[in-house]
Amino acid sequence: MTDSKKPASSDGALPVDPAIIPPATGAEGPRPAAQAQPRRHPGQLLGLIALLLVLLAAPGFYFYTQWLQQQHQAALHQLEIQLAQLEAVQAPVQSGQQQLQQTLSNLEQAQRQLLDRQTQVEQKVLSLDARRPNDWLLAEADYLVRMAGR
Image 1 (cartoon, helix red, strand yellow):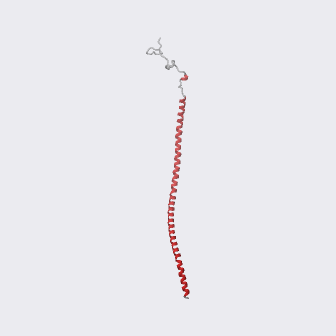
Image 2 (cartoon, helix red, strand yellow):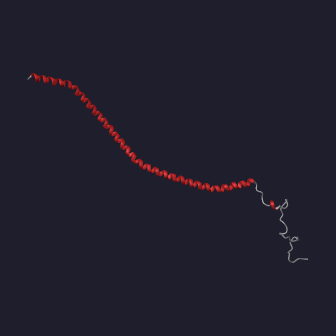
Image 3 (cartoon, one colour):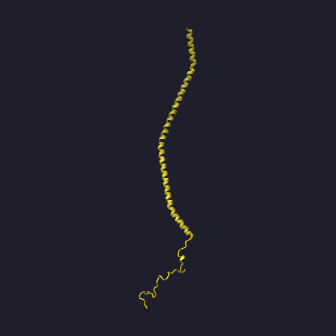
């Protein structure tokens, strides 16, 4: 009764078709189909959602910071241009201010000289006023001498 189609095993056992016998599952016994997938806990689902949000938000944050940096660079560039314009305007203004200071200094010096000259003229006028009484007396005496000589 040997079957020529099936080879005999070396230990003397009959050959077994693996499709017919289910795989061994251990001490628990066979698992039902509903328990074949691992159970997900609400914390795992929340963690997964948080991870997805972080993965989606990270590129957005990166591009936002890049945009913000570009905005700051543009504002800085505008400020540098304005500073250069102000410095270009400031140089002639400072030059004009120095000229005005020099002119003011010259005018103050001229004013002091005029005040000194005015003081000198006033002193001469006062000295002339002081001589006038003597002058009229001399003129009167001269007049009387001429009248007497006629």
